[in-house]
Length: 326
Image 1 (cartoon, rainbow, N blue to C red):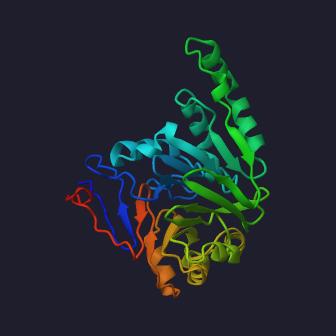
Image 2 (tube, one colour):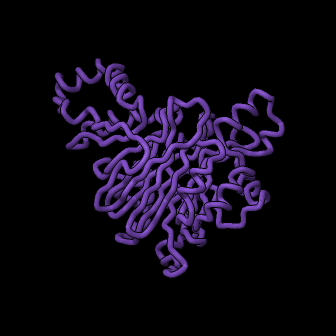
Image 3 (cartoon, rainbow, N blue to C red):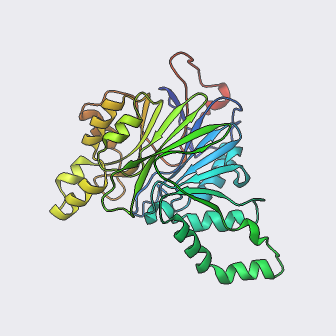
């Protein structure tokens, strides 16, 4: 039977597989929704990397991995998160342009086209304009049919409003300020970023896909939440020399993440973009981080987990409507 998992440890985590949509509390602070926690590997229970920061009635997407549009729809339907309706997206932020983080971008762009009444705001590194142009060119025949045929779709709302980002503040509105910082990610394309989201009640840092990074530790110092990618140190031990070099250059091991998190000391560490010992086995990653010496609060993130985080000064209990029995 489907179940709703709730964990209280600076966060309440609501699983995706609910019997019916619960009431989504309004005005109760900043939330994090993990839309996809996987890697390029085809994991049947983890979609491609994507998450949303939800503040009030607006959502801010970070990356658009495979399945992100369907995951948003599922979050609206099953979890009652109305802020993840397409019309409520205030911005899309790309950490970098690797395929696993962008395969959902064409889906997002074209699916939103007939629903939104204004261009989608998109923020990304150098290359994001060229990628956007290439997507529009690839779907030119489809776009022509929809604009000139019976649908009469409005071509002025199709092309996203794209901004190329650099380091520093890249976005702000009444809900959030977003800062970008560079992170090392091998030979990536040509640059990769992490993001810091500061709202009225929370600071959330998203690592992107870095190898071990002092900058992530600095940016996440005393943040409420650090959302960080991770791979199994055990997998590294059994890997070939070539794959070891790749892992060291592009990603962060569980052992290295413990070092980063011990320097940052976030209120909660959430693991995402998880590469386990086998293609789809990530169950031991949180234990690896703990065994490497991290004693803070940690969650092994899963698709459609929802976190709404409370400080020690404002302890809250899960409401009766949040505690669904099997």
